[in-house]
Length: 168
Image 1 (spheres, rainbow, N blue to C red):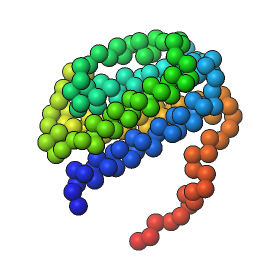
Image 2 (cartoon, rainbow, N blue to C red):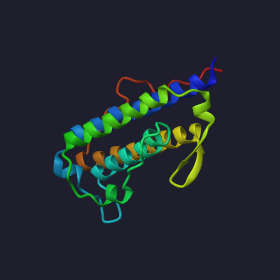
Image 3 (cartoon, rainbow, N blue to C red):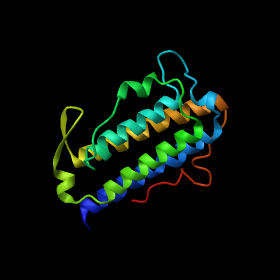
Image 4 (cartoon, one colour):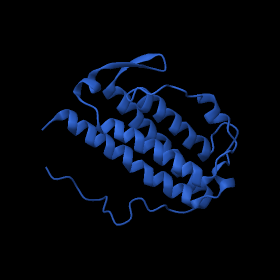
């Protein structure tokens, strides 16, 4: 087994697992709901999607893909609109697709090489772990806020028996 290829495949699997969940949430919401903040200390789903796009672009597309870093992180949280729900879906989908393409084309030197992101040095592996964790974290927030707004189960695990015991 090639451990680098296994790491890439599993990382891509977990990154890709989040996109349909975010899209399902966005499909439940109208343009007003997507920009609604739970309170003044929290972000809207629109802010979270913009933040994820900025983070994935800075860390993967720029950090690993060597494209210029043009991120304006503060604007991701300051936005109170400016994108429709459909535009946000397209933005997160194209960002994740580009990032996955970059990750899939990495070699062992890319995974172990050190790069500077946000003023700190990280290996390619650390960058991918960060993005995978960060995406999952905010996907959970998007899911929670959607459930609060709509008072419904989103059915992510419909048809799966999550009570199956591990075999020793």
